[in-house]
Image 1 (cartoon, rainbow, N blue to C red):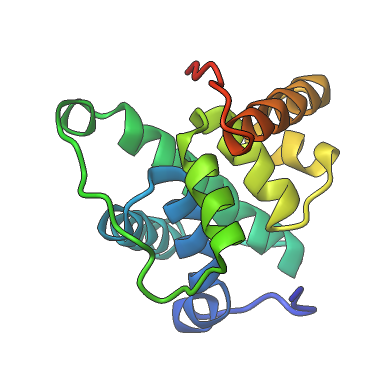
Image 2: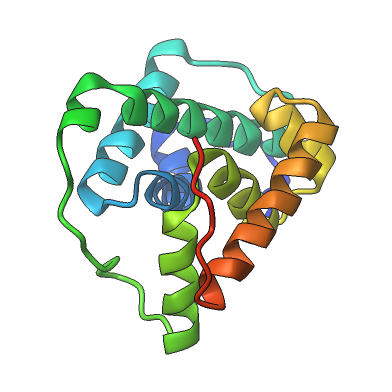
Length: 165
């Protein structure tokens, strides 16, 4: 739900965008506790830097960009690469069996494909907007969307998708 006015306080921003940041982080890191840590980092960054936003859409885009960057840093960390998280269902969400299958298949995709597919399908961004958010050429985003969809289709049909980083 796009807001028309730029929110001023961290509490207001957390109230409106906290769930979006948590869902985005969870889609990337695949673990509720780690997603909550990312959420906390994003909002600490917001409070520390106190950026000025031109619009509500700019504010939302900043939060998504910082969330994606925090997730990438988290996934590259030595700790994360040497540990394995517990598999868990997202406790506050009830999926139909079909949705659960899609969520599980999405979780198996490499991060770069999960990011673009999540932003496009869940957050509703166009390819050009995703390119700006992730600071990638639009052609790269379109290619990643096509490859990600192909891999997702193969996973859902029971085939073996080639997981590449």
